[in-house]
Image (cartoon, rainbow, N blue to C red; front, side, top):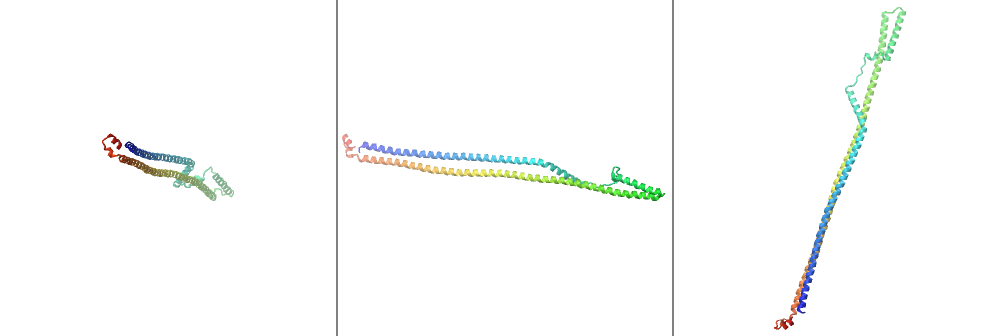
Length: 307
């Protein structure tokens, strides 16, 4: 091998080693950049997904809250309409209860006096006066026929007859008045009791409606709250799971990228080392091909021959 060809080979081996090393270094940097870009992309996507999930959850919770409010308002409106239907019966019940309370405090008492059985317009009193006249005339006529008119016995008979008739009429008038009073009293109490009962029944039905509506509204509100809480928990769980998956992907990408970049670094170093080793072999061959006897000759020709 001539010195020139040896030097050319030495240079070619060095360039080849450097080229392999440069190519592997470029590949290593490319892998690291791609890994970093992929990791950042996954992190950005995770953040975007978390925002989207949160927004969707808030929208769903707001929709449920609005629907709950509308449903509870509708129930309240229905209850108000029902209250308007109950109001007349409630008012009647209040009036009946007030009337009964007044009766209990100021209970009417039966009162029967002279004016009650000596009313000139009373047909019974008129009949009693007619009967008294007829009876008195009969007694007087009988006394006149016997020549005893205006005698003590006649006056006694007239007085007895009048008292007996008055007692009979008084007793009958008293019984009629008492019967009428009792009938009116019982009718008034019955009417007031019926009105109070109607009001009590209406109040009971309205209270049941209040309980039912209030219970349904409470159930609606609790259901909306439970839905909101479940939505928050589910969204948090979903984001956590996605976060774990994303971090796992990022970790695996980092490990894989680092390993591949390391392989390229090793390959580049091996190529560089092979080039250096090849240059060493080329240099050894060049040195081995030199004739040092001629090299140290005295003529230019001898130098040329040695090389």
